[in-house]
Amino acid sequence: MPAAAGHERLLPIGVGVVLVAAAIFSVNNVGEARGIVAQPEATPRLEIAGLAEAAAIERKYELEIAELEAASFDNVQAVATGDVAQDPIAAEALLWKPIVVDTTVADGKDMLRRYRVKAGDTLTAIADRFDVTMMTVWWANDLKRKDDLKIGQLLVIPPTSGLVVTVAEGDTLAAIAARNRVAKDAIYEYNALEDEILVAGQVLILPGARGQGIPVPKVTARPRSTTSRSGSGTYRGSGVPSRYSGGPFLWPVPGGQIVQYFHYGHYGIDISGDTGDTVRSVASGTVTFAGWKNNGGGYQVWIAHGSGLYTTYNHMSGVSVGKGARVGRGQRVGRIGCTGWCTGPHLHLEVWKGPIWNGGVQVNPLRYF
Image (tube, rainbow, N blue to C red):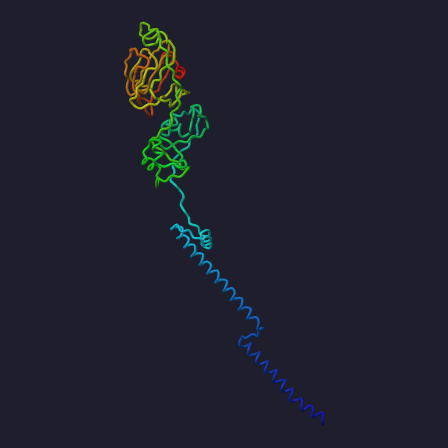
């Protein structure tokens, strides 16, 4: 019986083990049924800590951005009032969010046109094409000689007769206007300026302004002739001198300057002057024609000087002598004008060897000055 008693004592212990196992199994099944999954206790703590850290970093960045925006606003206000911020955060904010300033200024450069020289072009023809004076083209391109005009050359053509200037350091609108004898208001309005503050390098158009004239050859005094009172030479019965005694011509327009030289297609020289200025005979001689001609020269005077040498004076507003009159060197023969084919008042002077428009040829007048 002792063996049976041992088995009886083990039975309650086995039942207890089974009940405990059943209880554990039941609890696990209920948890799974309710969606509760057992996990290590440390895992939730790590995940919660990670979310908290991310939230803190995000909050920190939000605060820094708010501080930068506030500093930027404060620094803008300080710049506007002249109290420049010294805070490094504000300085960084200014670099991060700069103020956009409009630095454009009114400029006449966009009004300038370009023209490429073609075969047969002359300064006068180009100027006529763009409705400006020949000297306007001369000044705008800083030409020194008529021969500077070459085929293929690119010319700057101003929009109106006058000068093109580039503002230099220290220039003022009033100073530029006074220096070039142009009304300050005219410069202001033509260039659509918004104020009188100029910037170095700014291009301005000066309507109606005038630059330096084309250099005039040196004129020397003509030696007096002992053969006649007028110093022209010997006259024959017809009143026309039989020979020209030589010597340099007198400049026909006192103070006038050459604005176009003798060249192909322009067989004379153009001399500047204002309407009504005196035109003088370059040498003594006899008037062979005085009046109007439909040859482009308008009112003109022709003078025979002897030895087959003639001069003509063209585009005048009026003549002061008549055909057959004897004139002395320097005597007035007419006045500056713009009659015939011309774009502005000036004298067109021609020198002929041989009868004018009747077998003679035009030569460069500057040979005789």
